[in-house]
Image (cartoon, rainbow, N blue to C red; front, side):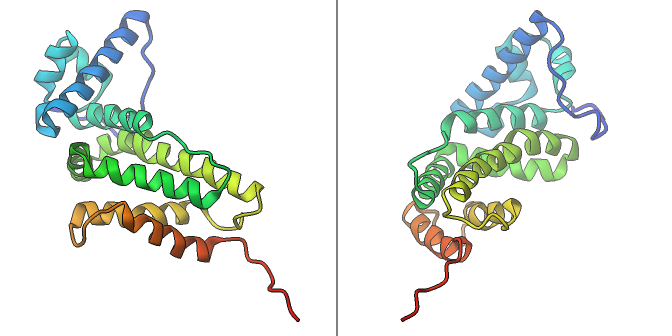
Length: 208
């Protein structure tokens, strides 16, 4: 059972000793292994603690709930799985990145993501970890791609980054969660083309 912790107290604090850091990393690795091997249901507090070689009390000293440690661990998995492309072209970078996300969501880990997202709705404390290790990282990645596009004159710097994130990533998450249409890599190019036409830096047409 998760401890009752305020949202403010849920903010991640780095381990304060080498031993604490080692145990923290062991728990992260154990959680990632369990998620990969058996999905969300396999990563219980008992299983994480046992595989990490620590007590449940120690595990709760690092995270306030099962969902929090999963959110932290899963977010780090996505960072490793989704490198930032840099082809020199905004449309290509965006297409490559979104296709890699589609592949990730279509894997077994996509189901883990959907279950984690649902759990965070019920656990506002864990939601803070989801925001930090998943949403913030996606925002940072997209912001890096966008800044390069602005510097190259490919994009309109006045467009809000958060609006763009919702525009590009929202359809992928919605299709994953709702299943109203299949989540396919082939649909990414159309999505990017439609969005870039509206987000691209406007240029006056040549008259004459």
